[in-house]
Amino acid sequence: MNSPTFTESTLVSGLIESDRAAVAQLIQTHQGWMKALAERMLNDGALAEDCVQESFISAMQKVASFQGRSSFKTWLKRIVINNCLMKLRQQKHRNEINVDDLMPQFDHNDCRLELQWPAIKTPDTVLQENQNAEQILNYISQLPYDYRVVLLLRDIQELNTKEVARILECGEGTVKVRLHRARCALKKMLEPILFEEKDS
Amino acid sequence: MKKMTSSIMRFMKGKMLRYVPGMVTCAEFEQFIDDYLDKNLSPKETIVFERHIKLCRECRDYLTAYANSIALGKAVFAVDSDDLPVPAEVPTDLLQAILEARPPEQLG
Image (cartoon, rainbow over all chains, first blue to last red; front, side, top):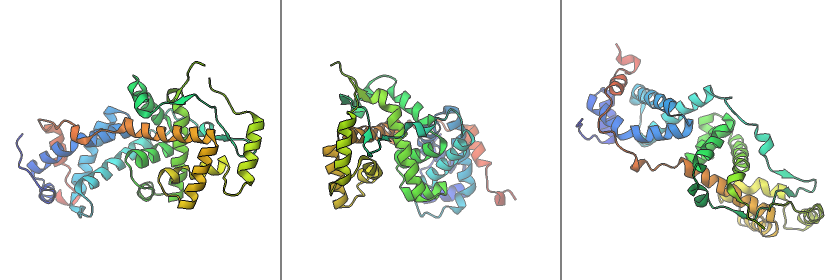
């Protein structure tokens, strides 16, 4: 389909007027990254497809309220994230692990209780091994909803603490605590693939 | 072979970290990890934090593994949006569904 090239402002005007060519350009320009983002957040291709379609529809319904305070892509990204959060909330307690068992341990002198390993692999080395990337995605998907969402928004989407607190409607302190606990749990889960055990 | 530091060594280290000025315990160190990685510590706090890293192998290894876990989380999710294929054809059903999703006031 050959569609005329719209600038951001003419695209927005075109969408408000339900211009077919504007909608076609909206899909062509944004569908790829929206699907990639939804797949990463949801870890489910079919659910991500639904999420993208719903996000386009939400965008179309709300486009008249777009005021250009951020870029159109940032505005659209927020819609996708919110739709993903709704879907994640619906599957809240599926296969979730208890993170309390994965927190760092200290003795009565406040000294860390940690096994000493001969070597720690670099991220590049870990990712060179087959199936490790899939395993890491699987571990992240096992984190409880409150922790997984903070990890996704803060570490993966690289939103700052204030933005995450606004999206999740909680305090910045809560975001920081959940992020730290999520990172601690992920580190503990990754130990089998992160640490190198050399023969002595 | 992985091993745990002996309890007598931990006892001595714990006393030193707790009572020597300018030191923090491992439990206190834990509370500063994220701010250290985000470079949010003051210069004075950074010196104390980095002094602990030099003295404590457990926290040094822990911090490395913790930072590598964050990097791995980011790496497995990273997709360069510029590398994503642009669909040659716009799906007609999707286009139609979006066109039909006019805001309530436009439905007349």
